[in-house]
Image (cartoon, rainbow, N blue to C red):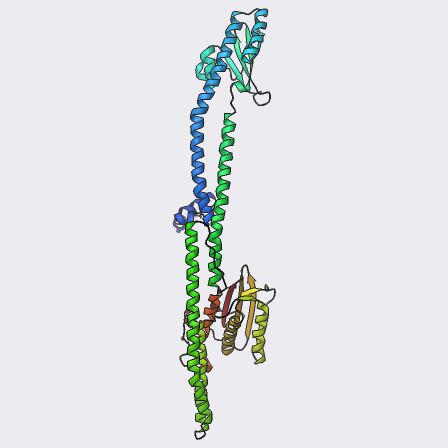
Length: 470
């Protein structure tokens, strides 16, 4: 009876690959840009290292395939010729007197130690009896010159720096000790040391040079970041490569243009503020001197003038963006306590948790107080109690303002940051102002390099999160 078990087994999801296969699958899904190292220093170093390695591999291949083969063959051929000559001498002159003379002359002229073992025979693995059994250049050349069974023993090659060669004679065994220098050349070590040393020297010099070039780019990036946070940045000195100097000059020109535009905007706003406040002041004086109007009319007109003045202040603050204040090292804990204390004096219920915050955080104190005041004021307006918390996360300071109010729907949270936009449709200032508070607050925080985001609060209402870099 088929209960469907086999079908489920046949369509089961295969297990995810692990280890090398998982890494290989991740690499296959990466784009060429993602495969490259992230930093300019690493990419420039890679551009030097890869060709360098290719050159070394090609040079090493050519060296070992041609030079070493030829040199090894010639050295083996020379040693094999001397061994063959000694073998012929010993075979043709077997007397003890002749053997003594051969041994002495072989030591003097060929640097070979010769011994003859009477009656001994070659046995065991490694004995070459045919040409096809030869495995290296020395054995091949020895067979070509001897045509007798022989054995090459390399066991004392590293310790005694000698090579033992045994050749089978008709009535004994010829034992020859050859120095390692007869079949080995130090060219290999010299070549490897030269290639490795020159490569390390080249890469070290290139790394120092690249570091100095990349350092200019890093300083330029730091200056641009500081300027973007509204902090005072001196003239950046053009240095490094031509392209880096060109970017530095463009940055200085851009910064000066932005400063001039900000100064001109401040001058224009100051003039507008003066021109608009003057008629408002005259209207207040005229209102104060009016004696025939009904008291309720005068009160309404005063409220209208006050609202016009508050709107004017809000518009000017939004356009100005607190751009005239410089960022200074500030006591963040003290700023939070000052703002919270002001609201507590007005009867608000606020809990503050801001322990172990770093000292000397660079920010604009007045503008930052205004942001905190705006966020806490909104929380108090829509909730009964407020929690304010602050903590350090790596290179950021995170400040949260939680309330127990109705909150804001998730799809409406970005809309409240738009200028002059209010979720509450009326224009009554007592129920939500004119729709510029959060816009100005985010503009100020982003001018310091941070941001403001809205989310769900653990208290059931809205959470406003402010992040600023240290």
